[in-house]
Image (cartoon, rainbow, N blue to C red; front, top):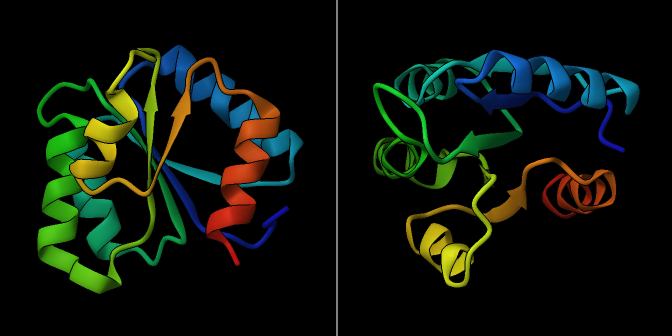
Length: 123
C-alpha cells in the first residue's frame, strides 16, 4: 500500500495527529503534518505531496478554505485532497466534493477505508 507516497495530514488536534501517525506507520506509511489549513496550504505549495488528508475544522484556516486555495493556486498540479472529519452527516460528502476535495474519510479512521482511498489515489 503506497509505501513511497508523500503524505500530508492537516490536523489541529495533537492527539489525533499522534494516533494517525501510529496508524499510518503500522501500514508502512510516513506522514508529514500541518496544524492548520494555512500551514497545509504552504506545505502543499512547497512540497511534492501525492495525497493530502485535510481536517475540516481547524483554526486560522479551515480545511474547506485551504482546499479552495490549493486548487486555485495550483490548479491541475494540486494533489488529491481527502476530507477528514468526525462529522459524517447527510450531504457532507457532496459539500466537500463541491469544495474541491477528491475523497472523504471519517474519524476515527477506518483502516479498510484508508487503504481503499490510498489505492484509489495512488494509481
